[in-house]
Length: 314
Image (cartoon, rainbow, N blue to C red; front, side, top):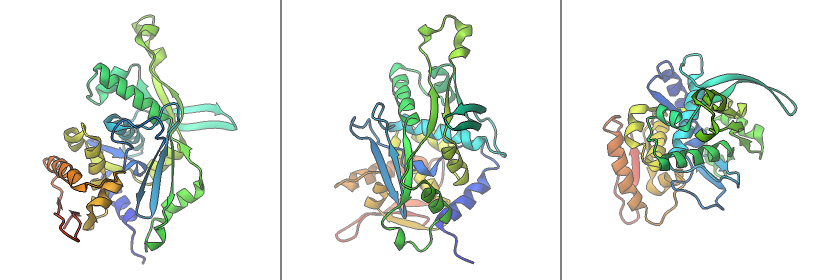
């Protein structure tokens, strides 16, 4: 019997947790790095991260740009959580059935994701502040993330890996060089002044229509489960969110793991000449994560000729 790949071990561990997901959120493996940490420049229209034998890329609509920061990540995690909760062992999903005509045929399935009748209502579901800046940044990120296209495939280093996920390789091979949109259609919140009365709010309910290609990816390739209690203590930092979901992904592989600090930062799309500054930040985030999740992990100090490392389960 062939040795299971890291991806296969991760999938088995994740599947074992799906029976009890009421206190879990989920993140697609296409988003283990959630985009720029801060608002990107208008001409930054792609975000690519290489992870082992695979790369993942996010491409922006020039009209909107890339999703960024905390809210871009929380929106994406919320979308993925609704997809997973819509499964046979799950509950409380905001997904709804659709049957609509599209060019070339009919679009059927549980693809309509209801967002509610107001942005403040949606923010309340996530216990987020409804202040003006928050609402502007969240609305901005909803437009950005709903307009992106996603792609992935093999890196130049793929040949050096003895075991890779053939299913994931086949998925990307089927796409070829094409990218696919996350959403097929959006209808976002109207301004309050556009409503004639309170009873009119239902007519302006917001929703998105998800691409079935994306929904199938999230369900087939086991979105990474994350404890809501941990997210609650790190949710103000986009890097902390990326670090935590990367930790969860690696932890589900079930094997000790070490990585050079620069390689770890590259997993989050960070390339810097001063990795030690980021190491101190990540150590603080790790301490905060461990107040809830007692993960066996630590950083080592580098010296001349020996880079600093991050160790998991060692």
